[in-house]
Image (cartoon, rainbow, N blue to C red; front, side, top):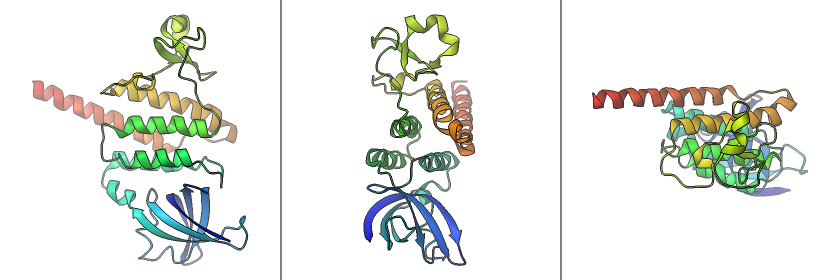
Length: 253
């Protein structure tokens, strides 16, 4: 049997002397692996970079077999961010976490969101908030979606500023006040209202929110922890903000 699709490269590992086993997040066939003959050649190396958007043709005798893949580049996202540490860490974070998806289970909407995030990695003011939204979408696809639309205590949707770390439901300012030290912060850009600027504090709160549920609901039951590259990304973003603050203070003199 055989099929054609498009996908994002999530991982590449050597197989034998010249081949590679490639892991993709495909549009219609989910997270899928396949053998690429000559994958370690000079010709194929630029194509088989994690994060690249590719055309894929898969062939196998039976659907459950590893099968063979041929790949062609649609957009080389890896090359576009190779010289920039922060977006490169973002690309690595997205592709690493996408490997949490069950194999061969289609997630077309998350695939589209993944491409959307990758397409904005050259716009620093945009992609960090998009990546947080992508992590929320990943939680949803894994069956652990959060309810950020109404207060868990009152049922209202006004002044939602907290999230319960136990239930994943939003909590209003008044209902959450007695327990504020035990609640997670719901950043403004996730409260269902538009805002032109996302602050550094918003990003810190957003990554803490998604990180908590990825760790407690998805990774801990598997005996795993959040990927190191995600922590490095958050550190790099924090350093970048500090540098920008210092430059701004110097200009204002």
